Image (cartoon, rainbow, N blue to C red; front, side, top):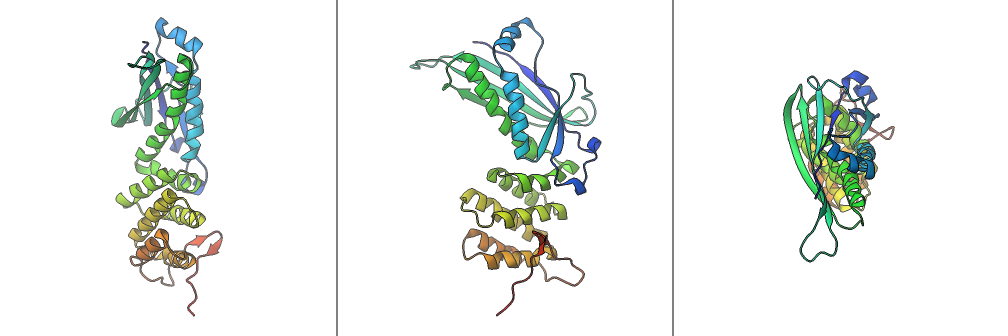
Length: 286
């Protein structure tokens, strides 16, 4: 049974790239130090025979896009004492593990993902995965590495705080992950983060997916309606009225109607929210 440790650092440097609200449609860039094995002769065979690092790196790049992020890789020498960065450790990798009654071994691995701010640990999480389907140690380990990318990037996306959360407006628009959208909606609602760029992104997502048949997506949109209602921002009243009128029945219509009760009437000084380049006007009364 082999054990290896892999460490790599992910640096989230949004401000250095001049990220701003005007660029919200662009993916926020994340700088990564390429994954690497810790120095040591014991790792040479795995590094030469298996492609764990390559699969992990490719999985991170692919998964980042689902959460409104874009990865760029740094050189080996980078300052980790200042700024905000994410450190991901493959803390345990076991190539061949036998279980009683099994016809062939399985492999398992565990990662730890941690957020650091100016060298101080802010929060962390761990997760382990197994693989027994693929034949061959390297095939199983590479499959695990590929599967790590999505949960890592999702966790990073949901746990970055402060000004960095501005990129979530882009992610809400671009992501098709209903579970991630729902978690973002809950996070914004619970944090009472009613920045209009985020509210606009939430409204656009609701409008673009309002006819979905997917129950999980409908649940996510309902949370976004709840979030908009909690803002008490009259800018979105006409939008919610149009949304409710466009739906015949169902959960989303119910939540749109409920959210409307929290929004005051629009005054001449309030600019109504614009969706799909058209003002979401209040439905005409018969």
